[in-house]
Length: 276
Ligand code: HEC
Ligand code: HEC
Image (cartoon, rainbow, N blue to C red; front, top):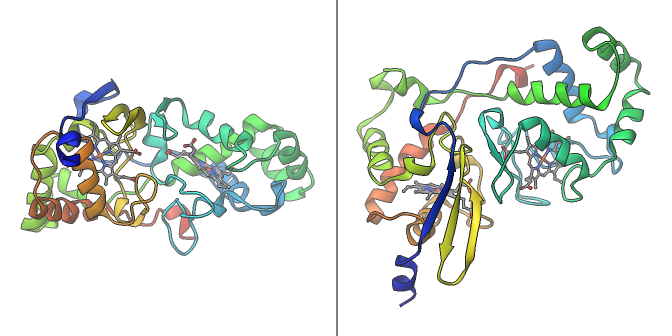
């Protein structure tokens, strides 16, 4: 019965960005190294936050390089974020810069007044020197700009990019079949662009609850970024859930397994900026 109700779910795809490119390989690195290194220091510095934690608290980049975390909240990954157009769970189209600024005001995120953040930066002679050299002066806009450059440096190719570029032998037969199913089963209608997501929002409506607008998440590194869709702990259950809520074609268990094999090819390399 429930299954039947779920099967008549309707989906309203709202807005698309870059739909025509469908799926493209990752764009090449494009960032200013000095700004990115300064941004990296700000990202990890616990002294700049009113409660003495850093961005790393929720967006892990040390040891486990997922860009996300399970606690204190399930936070989205910031790896490859610079290729997204839509942010927040509810699907807001805005710039990466705006999203970083929002972290400061968000009580569930960085939760620190810009004035406090800047005052702390100004106490550090190394930062004073670096800001002077790169920007001329210290202000919130410049600090956000440096953090944005750091996030731009967190763009990492995966085996899938080499496959898209024509290196047929980097995929085995199961992976190729998984990718074919990903296209054929319509995943690509929503998970498209260089990030296989992050380019649009879709209304998801089911019989049990009101329709909700959701950002289509990027699927890069997805095998490492559980939990999914709130609190689903593995990819198989996620696909079972999606089968009932957004996927209009048939999808059996064996096909799900193949798609998951493909999704694992989206695991990225560690970006150079995190290697030193
Ligand atoms: C306490 C946890 C927490 C901290 C600390 C935190 N964030 Fe976030 N971050 C989140 C959550 C939660 C979201 C999702 C926001 C939403 O959906 O409205 C997010 C979203 C983001 C995104 C968007 C990712 C995407 O592509 O969707 C970026 C970029 C980001 N944060 C950067 C930062 C930076 C830079 C800092 C440090 C200045 C920071 N965050 C500190 C929890 C945190
Ligand atoms: C109509 C658009 C649409 C289609 C088609 C679609 N998805 Fe999604 N997908 C979404 C949205 C929206 C979410 C986020 C839902 C939420 O947060 O409530 C999502 C979430 C996911 C997630 C969880 C990612 C995460 O980080 O939480 C995976 C994995 C995923 N989709 C894979 C697929 C696969 C594989 C297919 C094809 C079999 C597919 N999707 C088809 C829109 C779609």
